[in-house]
Length: 342
Ligand code: CP3
Image (cartoon, rainbow, N blue to C red; front, side):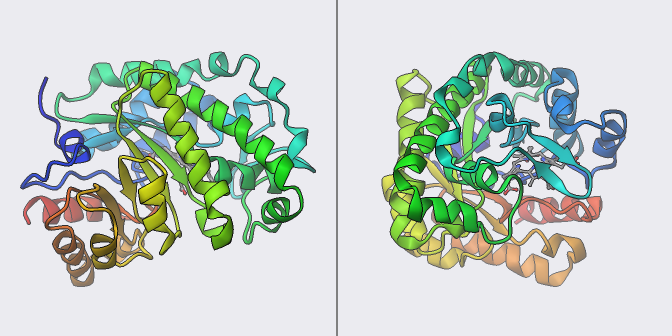
């Protein structure tokens, strides 16, 4: 087997080259993505169409030769497969049937769960057939807390009041819901690992909403249980955790969650991260996605600062969050050229 730069870095080996991929790399900033989206208006059907999902997964690889491909899917597919009536409305975003109380979601939601998500496995298999030998394939899921925010609010939210209220008022019931979500996520990640994902990533996009005193039971413990479950199922793929907006909480998360690598957002000073995170833990991140819209000198300075900060640590270059739809496609190439020529 070829030594893949992305995977060797995840295993803790620092190479001369820094591997690169970007969150939401298959998405609306690409005209080839928009062309398929034009034909496939329903986002869920898109995610469940193995051929279309594989095609868009490969688009940024063909265009930019990224070191990793991330399967085209969505963290909310887990809630869709649990029967929560997830849909994506253009201009609004995701909507689903909100639960009044956390115990309204029952274990029976998981009946037939893996079968409903089997097309994601098929998409991974199809992608693998076309992927260049040096490119790695990433499978992913949302973290339980982030899924809870969507269940409580019925969609995206600004301040997550209802989800946080559950933590204060309905802790026992919320714990029960977290257990169901852990089971679902173990199943979804295991399915992707079996289908050929070489790395798994867990997105905790709204970790920032959790009060510090509650991080352990709402963030760290569910992640740790997911990782133990995936390992119990015999899967050895490295697992990247991305607890967005966790700030100083990254230290405890890195030490206790059991993740093999950590994604950091652009609110984190890379030099702080290098100084404070466990020695040799691979770090992924963390250029502000908005810097790519104008590119230019300031962007190069920021890239250099990130690369220098992780000079002595395994590092995967990425943005601090998903690329925005208005990003000019040439600027992505400019960023990649700068990193690869550094
Ligand atoms: O990164 C990739 O290229 C792989 C695919 C991927 C998507 N969503 C496709 C998508 C991944 C890894 C995600 C993760 C995801 N989805 C997260 C976690 C990461 C993050 O951004 O914090 C979250 C919170 C979601 C939920 C979600 N999906 C929202 C809130 C939205 C609507 C907002 C938006 O950007 O339109 C989506 C839709 C979505 N997921 C799109 C894509 C490409 C845009 C859909 C479109 O084409 O109209």
